[in-house]
Image (cartoon, rainbow, N blue to C red; front, top):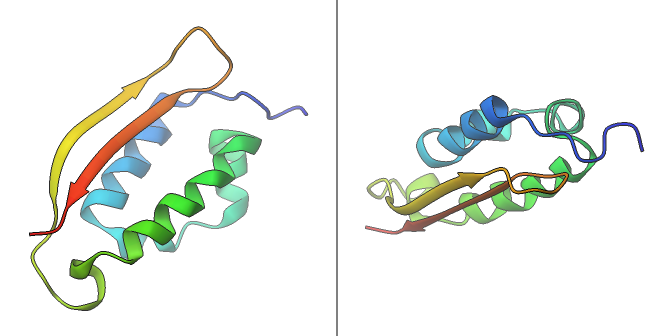
Length: 89
C-alpha cells in the first residue's frame, strides 16, 4: 500500500498533544486525515481516541489527567512508536 509505513513525527506529536489536552479537538479529526498524515496504520489511533473519551475529565468535568511517561520514537522500521500514560486525578 502506498501510504503504509508513513512516519510523520510532527503530526504524531500534535495528535498526542490533542489527545492529552483537547480530546474534543482530536475527535473532530476525519478518518481520512489519519490515513493521509499517519499512513494506513494511523487509523489505529482512533482506538486511542476512544480510550481517551472514557476518562473522567471528558464527560464528568473532572480534573485533567496527569501525564506520566510520554514517548515518541522512530525505530529502524517503517512506523513510529508513541506511548503515554494518563492517570485520572
